[in-house]
Image (cartoon, rainbow, N blue to C red; front, top):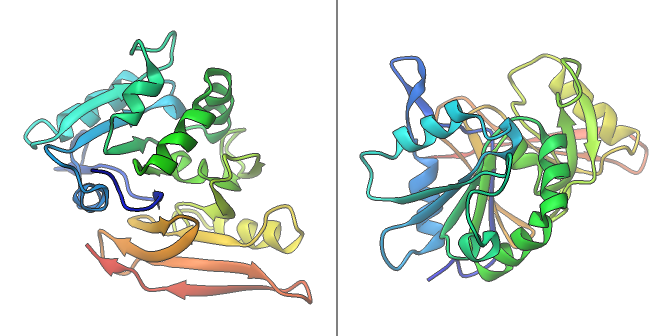
Length: 243
C-alpha cells in the first residue's frame, strides 16, 4: 500500500543525536509518522537520498546507524560518482518513504536534473510514495526558499521542483537573519507566499494542501508568511502537534 494521496513532509527535523554525538543518532518520531502516512503493507521501506551532502559517508553512516535496531527496510540512493542502484526509477517507486537529507539545495537540484530525478520523484509522489526531508530536503519540493548553498550569507533560491506552490524557510529560529530575509524576499516578490519551520518542526502536505504542522520538541513553531495587496508582509504562527 501507499499513501492515499500525494504526500510530502517538509521539515527542519534531522536525526536525533544520542549523547550529543552527531553521528550516533536515533531516527526521531518524524519517521514513524511518515510510515503511518505511507501505510506500508509490511516492514516500511525507506530510502535515504543524500545528494545535497555530496553523498557524504558520515551522513550515510548516521542514517544506517539510526535505523540499525529498527524493523525498517533501509536503502540509500547515491549519485556520486555514479548511481549505486541499477534502476533508479524502479528502486524509488518501490519505497514507502523517500527521505532527503540536508546540505546544498542548489547542488541537489542541479544534480537531480541531470539524472532525471525531478521527473522520477514527481512520479513517486503521484504514486503515493511519501516524500520527506530536512533543510535542503524540505526546500527542494517547493518553488524556492532561502539557502546557504552559495556561501555563509543566506541567499534566495528559485527553480525548486515546485511540487508545492509555495516558498519555504527552514531552521527559522536558528539564525537571526533567516526570518527578516524570508520576509524581505516575499515582500519584494522574489519569492511567493510560503511556510517556514523552526528547528524540530515539519509540515505535512496532502497534495498541495497544508494538513498540519508537527514537532519533536516543545516551544517550536511553523509559520505562514504572505504578502498583502499593499506590499506588507504578514506572518501567522502555527502551533504544531507534538509527536
